[in-house]
Length: 297
Image 1 (cartoon, helix red, strand yellow):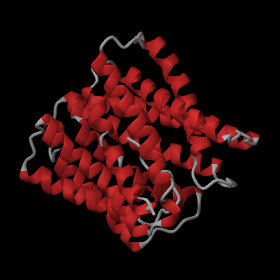
Image 2 (spheres, one colour):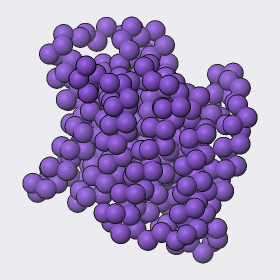
Image 3 (cartoon, one colour):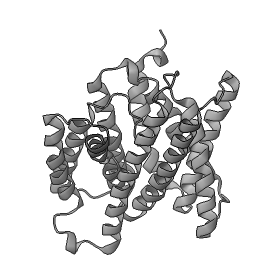
Image 4 (cartoon, one colour):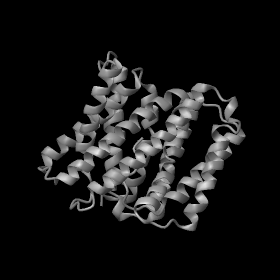
């Protein structure tokens, strides 16, 4: 058995690859909407090429197409909010806030899907609030307006991604393939079209003028969006719930660590403890969900 055939290797490799998403985004010197466009365009094109070579057809029903379109709208919003959040508060905290989608998903499950949360998940909610308060700052009014904007954008990212997951869940209800390559490829290219139009309306140029920016964007699209996502998706049905929860924890934890290592993010003792508490809350709140699409920030 080759190492790629090991589902645990794919799961944790995928989580590690995705953890570099905010780092690549922060290294690129183009505007946020343009970064989001190239992520989904490059990643979606790579997945589409894979579909062509494997002969898979896009035989979706009308309800699935509508669900994929809804997923694309939410994912476009997710990227729009998240890339701007990175500008204001840095890649580590922006990613930590985005992963609070676990709790918005929990709320949606209670309100719309009739799911009952476990005691562990209920305990995770106040734990997450305490952890985030310690990381973001206990005195909100003393924070700069830019910092406050970044925090709000990070939380809107989480809300948008919860909408994406609910829409993708609906699109996958009757799916016959275990790995959603077709769905993610279509969704990605739809998002690329939406963000291209958004960039034009905002006056952003889609022209990339430097080799370094092109290199970072290709790595972002191929490694994080295409390869990282498919590694995780292909392993979900073959690993335990606890391992999925650990992988969900690993991605924001590594992103926060990379922010400290690569961008010299200062971290006080209170912020460090708060980050650990918030990550523990994400773990406690996420281990019940086995088949949901994973965060691909």
